[in-house]
Length: 359
Ligand SMILES: Nc1ncnc2c1ncn2[C@@H]1O[C@H](COP(=O)(O)OP(=O)(O)OP(=O)(O)O)[C@@H](O)[C@H]1O
Image (cartoon, rainbow, N blue to C red; front, side):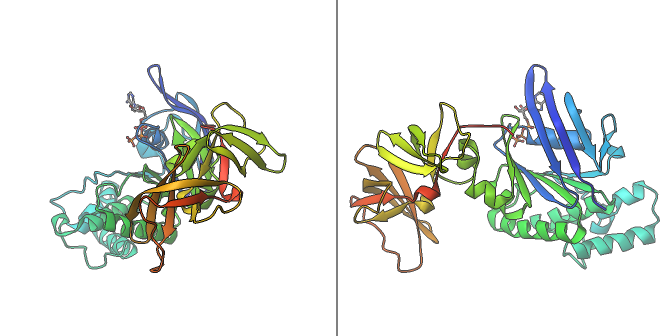
């Protein structure tokens, strides 16, 4: 069983400081939803309000359609997993997993059976009688998930559970977590400041800044169609230009900058003083002759070999820095530092966006 969660105009104040500011989102039953944002943007506070450790100052939280205001954490159908797993070192793995059931008075044979089922689910069959110290970091993480699932929560709340693991294991655990979520069908709400993690695992991502939800969309849309400069910059890299836009009424605009005029996408309704043009390094092309519109003469600076791509930092004659990422297919021509080239980008691959716009 899984439940949906509605956050309806939710605010959370600590004294005069507003940590969560009018957050509105409906998370569907069985969805893998991530809150993504920098440190201090209010992610943990949202999770704590859903689990009942904090109450909203304003607004309503519904779990499975029911207003949960006033319900204590243990009365809510949620389970919380932290980075710090707090497994019991003196208990075996199966005892750790079934601890919540023991507290509820479930008999030993049923507990053991349930623990073994859950160990299969998290891909650790045969680990029941091991001790915590005999497991690797990733295996401990799976035991923590099994322990949380043992009490059959309708919603799992995960607070940066992978951040203590090394990079390779973290990447492996992304796929594992996603698979466990799909197998159980339980709603997962995951918080992280790691964009790769959020994009790789989630059905939808909510990007947060300063307590406000900036955009809620599926990972592709977050990356390909960020609604503002904050989302564009937090999720991926960009070349950024300041300037003045003149929309042409067809979803594009001329953008006058000190480096010359450009053309880029501009959604209707985009206004504000702090609009800028954003284009991703992988959409920035280097060529020996100007390549149509949005072309700037540049000098090649740093060339960094990153394995699957080559990152080339260039500077225009007017002082703009443009980074181009060239995909390494084994025969990619690597530009020489000091070389004179043209950097260009397609108008459809660039977007004119405001700084921040909360949803
Ligand atoms: N109990 C509290 N009292 C006062 N301020 C708090 C309290 N809890 C959180 N805050 C503040 O609220 C803001 C949001 O904190 P929160 O822990 O939700 O951020 P976060 O996005 O989860 O950050 P991190 O990724 O660093 O954990 C921060 O500025 C934090 O200092």
